[in-house]
Amino acid sequence: MENRRGLIIAVLAAWMSAAVGWGALVMYASPNNVPEGVTAGGVAIGGMPVDHALKKLDLTWDSLESGSVAVESANGRTVRWKRSELGYGIARDEALIAIRRLREGSVWKRARYRYAFPKQLRAEQSWGKKTFVAAVRREWSWLESGRPTNATRTITEDDRVVYQSHTVAYRVDYDALFAAAVKATEASADSTSLSEGGRHESGREPEVEVEVRPIKLKLPMETVKPDITLERLKAEGVERKIMTFTTKLGSSAAGRLHNVEVTARTLNDWTLAPGETFDYSKVVRAVQIKYGYREAPVILNGKLVPGIGGGICQVSTTLYNVVLRAGLEIVERRNHSLPVSYVPIGQDATFAEGAINFQFKNTTGKHIVIRSGVEGRQLTVKLFGTMPANVRYEIESRTVKLLEPPVKQISDEFAPSGGQKVLQAGKAGYIVETYRTLVRDGKAVKRERVSRDTYRPTPIVVLVGGARPDSGAAKDGDNSGGVDGGGGVNKTPLLEDGVKARN
Image (tube, rainbow, N blue to C red; front, side, top):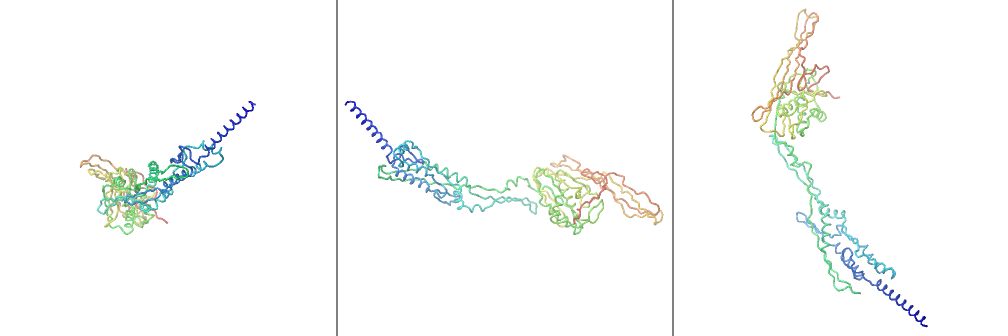
């Protein structure tokens, strides 16, 4: 009997323990509230009824998304948006679903879910940059129509160098503005205040008021400069006219005048950077493409003959004299085979397409600009750049040897025996040396020979009657040469002061 009573008591005790445990489990799983200490996206909702917590979160996040963003431009114009209009949003779904699940499933499932419920629910804030930029651009897109303009340098008719400043354009710095908005949003989250009325009792909703501090931003601007600014242009060092030289065109015919004018026009405003080498053949090619050359006398193997391009060497010669007097380095230069009338002997520079070129190097350390033009039957070439005011160069050419003209006899068996007739009067030739002297503060400090040139004599042609005589020949081996003269007699046709005819 006693054993039976003990068994009954044990069964009742076990049943009561199970009932108590089950009741405790039901009580743990049944509350319709959020576990204590829980936050969602930084908003405290622990201990609140689920419905109240959901409403509080929606109200809070709606307030944040509709918060004001004001952007003020430099001229005082202010534009306002809601944050959501600028691409701001809060990813709330994950947190809201997690809270709703507190009321779903069996008692056992709810109990396990509540036990493992996280203390912090994620609700990330984010900005859509494309939406942000598009909204701002709609208000200030007109700024994008402005374009920066380059600084300019003008050389006036009276040889003044005048600079016109560049202009800049302005653009909204969208990256900086977007970054400022994101940073301000993070800061405003710390200042967002929530006020709730009453207690979170069953059947009673909280009175939630959310105060979101407005975001105020200044419109950041970028300054867009042109490729050529005033500072960059002035740094090129084109300060003033440093040298000028003029040659006369005299009685040049229309064809020669045209050739000189179009070559000078093409050369005008030619700019050389420091260390750059000028190539006269490039000027000639540019003229051939744009204007073309006309018929005018050229030098073919030491004789003046009709040709195309006559006169182009007057431009190269005038430029050569400017370059000499500016102290620049001569890279390539040859004298004409015949003396020319427009400069002293020894100070000319010929050109023969494909054979002889004129080149010099800009050794000033700054940019130089070449100006050239024809006015009043005079050709003037000027150099603009940088040159010490106390420095100048003197040029001196002197004949070191006179070359007598050889005699060339032509026999005529039908002429009276012993009779002679001069068919062509000869001309003497010359060997000329040219020197350049550097003068600083009125004192000569350096003298250098820049060229030794040979101008071949023109033979005297004599008609002799009777037997065939021997022909005379020049006995001096010098010939029209390079910077230092020399060189043998040309065995192939050499066309100077002109170009080859184009088909």
